[in-house]
Amino acid sequence: MREFEFLHPESVTEVLDLLETYGDRVKIIAGGTDLIIELREDEGPENLEFVVNIAHLEELNYIRQDAEKIYIGSGTTHSQLAQSSLIKEKIPALAIAANSVGSPQIRNRGTVGGNILNASPAADTVPVLIALDAQLRFKSTAGERTVPLHDIYIKPYKTNISSQELLVEVAFNKLSRSASSSFIKLGRRNALAISRMNVAVILDQDSDGVITDLRIAPGSTTPVPSRIKIAEEVLLGQKPTPELIKISGEKVSEEMINLSGYRWSTDYKKPVIETLTRRAIQEALEGRG
Image (cartoon, rainbow, N blue to C red; front, side):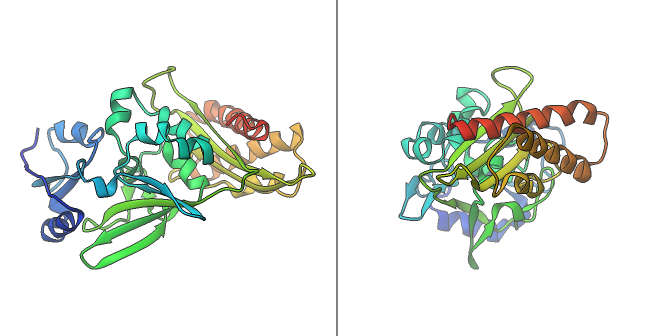
């Protein structure tokens, strides 16, 4: 394991000062479920000299709401998301996604902020947050800024976030009372599985059954996470039918190939992501998500 100095700040303000002082020589650790593995590698993170612990900072650990939005502190664990009555009531797909992460031990340690900033294509909570059009709030000694989640990703495991910025909060607008959500994950096994593919769907209909809002966000299919709007447009303004749902799933696979190219795994992934999308849309229509 690469040698480093372990720092234990007592506040977010102190963390920001450390980030400004040490820049890219610092790694933040909260749950550490990804970083610990990285630290064990012979080379370790490039330029690493300091690891800054933020796991104990209660000012980064919360789930709350106001009249319009839900706010999640970046230090909130997957277990807290999965067990939150607010999340289960307002956006159950996020609770389902959080509950699908790793093992109970990993869910008890791993955080929503870490899941986002690790930038793994297989991150389980990210597709749901992308579908929610989530906004991220960052702080540094220079101030703070809010950016859309989908704007931070450059490529797998790479973001455009400065080493002097700390993710402090994830926020998204509440869904209407009539909206529903779903999240489906395919792994190699039923537990302790990294997603081979997953998909999140948020859907709303009017009193006549016409779809007025649809958001489809797959994971592990494209270089960076995003909504597949050409698939959403198939059903928007329409009453859902099996044929339209099938076409929507096909549009997801077409966009996957457009963005990722044709690979050795495409013959497998294409029909699977189409099926997962159809199932996720159907679950959202039935309100089972």
